[in-house]
Length: 210
Image 1 (spheres, rainbow, N blue to C red):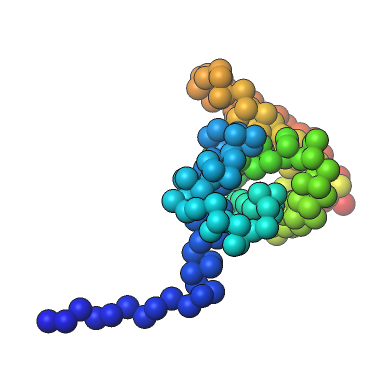
Image 2: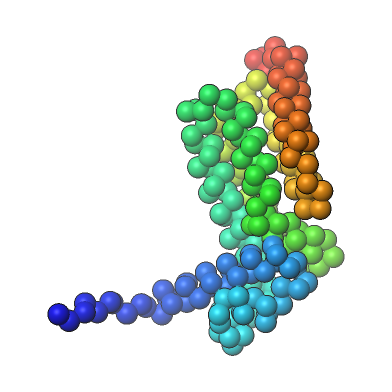
């Protein structure tokens, strides 16, 4: 019995597959060894591709980094939207959202993105190129959060600051936990955050409904 031949991939499909390998390898490399050590050689080795293959897709390492940052934000946004869309089925929607936000900050994907952010502090070109991507990313996150109604108990003017306060809390926590493991403290922190939010919601509830 003869094997059924698979249709040959188009040039566009082959290019997309190569770019996907490079982006995945860049996320893994930056997340594991850091931005500076994620060299072209390191990335290509992880992707099982030659440097020439990379440079046929991207003119420079910076171009690949920018594409990686964009893809990392897209993946995070997709996961965030999927979680937020199912909050209504949860017994404690706020707890589910907080746990997702915390876990997202601990992922290798976020570690890679965080490394890129840190590099952008001293790399003007990198910063200028990822700023508009990040701006759209965070706008979409906040817009998705608003659609869930999760923070409707709070005045509209504090919902975005509240989200970023929690984001930065869990982001900083993820960095420290790389060298200081305290599962017991993590449980206490989450309980404290939820209690504080509940107390604050009760205090500002009349203003939120105005």
